[in-house]
Each structure stands twice: as structure tokens, then as C-alpha cells.
View 1 (cartoon, rainbow, N blue to C red):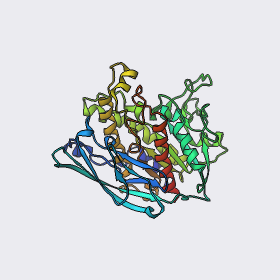
View 2 (tube, helix red, strand yellow; view 1 turned 90 degrees about the vertical axis):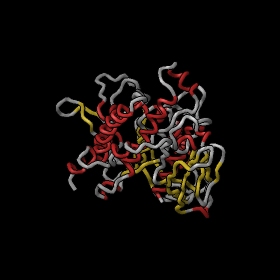
View 3 (cartoon, helix red, strand yellow; view 1 turned 135 degrees about the vertical axis):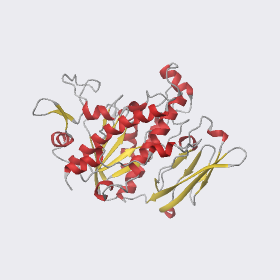
View 4 (cartoon, one colour; view 1 turned 180 degrees about the horizontal axis):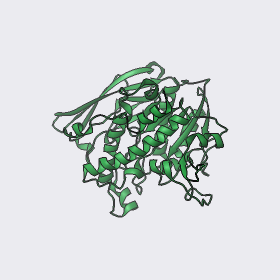
Length: 379
């Protein structure tokens, strides 16, 4: 298969997405949204928080029933701490009912539980690309901590950004305020050595002295040509945060722009590292408290506004990157969704004074989601 055809697949000649207009014609009040697959590791807690799978300001007014042969339902979540006997695939069904017991919506997923020593003896190169959630470096540190336990592969994190908070061996390409578009095209002719004034790590001057996206050159110059085995992308907040939450068409238009830029970046990664898995981390939900948004935005942006945008973004990401039956298998087999939106507590995982940035506990939960997917893939 030619590189030109692969690029065409990713920039629009073949779409990963279903008919979104048809989907919009059948609105659902709660829009219960689950990924097709979920991941957990023996001995590591995994959760699905009710507020993260439905579109409502009052999740406490609804009843959530989980049908699965593992896990338990608690006040605000479904929780599982897998044991060795749970290794395998488990069907999980979520049913949401109103206060009178009337069933409103139902969705299903598959929980993949893998052994604690999945991937042991292997080697894996990891690259993480993201915005301020990655810049904080807390969740990459948690991935590194978990990988440092017994029963894990040898690992290396590629990346040119090593903030002072980075643990030993941790590096990434995560920068506060960044978007898919910035990684595709941002060029700074006079960088000052800080992350605030720099080019995208993947953009270089070409032979014509014009900025050019060149992921292959990034690997060649910084890592002597070594390529990653998996690349995680956690983006979307800065791309879509400013959309008008009262206008569903405006939300979709903003997401369309983001998806177009994502296609460009992913296409160049496919070209530069054709054997690497490209793992799209689903944009995380907001703090459950309006106070977090008031502290940050002083009434300009609100929790319910971002919740509506974020929920639509989750729907679109799942539709685009999970539905891969209409593309050649050698392309589809390298695209994955990491359901980072499920296993983060929208209350205890956030400080009271921040709308979108988790606290230490919430960041660790993101790290667990990424680690669990990685262990499944290495299994």
C-alpha cells in the first residue's frame, strides 16, 4: 500500500465516522455513551463514574444498573479490582432508569482483564503527546510508576520535554494550551528555550525555508532514528473549549476542525512510524463543581457548557476511531481508543478551584487508564 493512499485514508478520502446527521436526528435525553472496549489489570482498580457516561446536570436523580460478572456498584460509580481468576473478556451492560424505575437507556461494552504480568520480558518505546494535562506530568509519572513494578516490560519514554516534576525516565511532548493544530503547524522562528515560545517538536524548516510537519525528522534528529511502539495522544480541551455550547452545529463544526488537524498529524505519524500503535485518549470530563469554573473563568465559561461540548467530543471520538471496519486492516489495526474519560472521579479527582485540571488523585486515575490499555495491548 502506498504512502499516498495511507495519507488519503486519514485526511478524508475514507471516513472513519458514521452518518452524524442521522445520529443527530434521533436525539437521546441522556445520551448514554460507552466505548466498545474497556481495560483493567489484575490488582489495579478500575472505575466507571456515572457522571462521565451521561449528559445531565443531575446524575444523582437517575439509577444506574451494571450487569457484569465482576465488579460492584457504589454510590457514584461501578468499581472493579480484578483478581487472577477474572482474566478474560466480560460483557458489561449499563442501564439507566428514572426515579420511578422506568428504564431510559442501555449500552454495552466489553471489559478486558489482563494478567498482572502482561507484557513481561518485552520492550516498549512510548511517546506521549498532549496539552496541559500532560504538561503537569503527573499522569505520565503514574504510568512510569506502574511500569516500574514487577511483571512489566522494559520501557522507554521518548520525548524532548522533561519538566522538573518528571520522574526518572519520564519525558513527553505535552505543553499547556496546545491543540492538535499547534502540533501540526506551530513554528517559532525565535524560540527562547521555554515551552511557551517554541515550535511544535514535529515542525521544521524545509529545504524551501518554509515550516513543514516532519515527524520522521523528529525521530531521526532526537532519537537517532528510533521509533515508538505506541504513541498516546491526549488532546481536545483547547481545541473545543470555546465553542458555543448552546449551538450543537457550532460544537460539531469546532470538532470537525479539530478532527481535520488530527488527521494530518496522525497521517504523518503513520508515515514516519508505520508499525507504531496510535492510541487516542478520550478527552476527560470536567470537574463536577461549578466552583472550579468560577475560580478559573469568573462567569465567562461554565461547567454545564463544557460538559455538553466534552460529551459530544466523546461521542465523535468514539465514532471516528472505534468504527474501523471500512478501512484496510493494515491501517485500522494501528488505531485505538483509550477510554480515559471513564476512570476519573469528577468530584474527588478534581480540586475545588479548577474546572478541567485534575488533582493528584485524578491524574493518577488517568495514568491507570493508560497503563491498563498498554498492558492489554502488550498481552
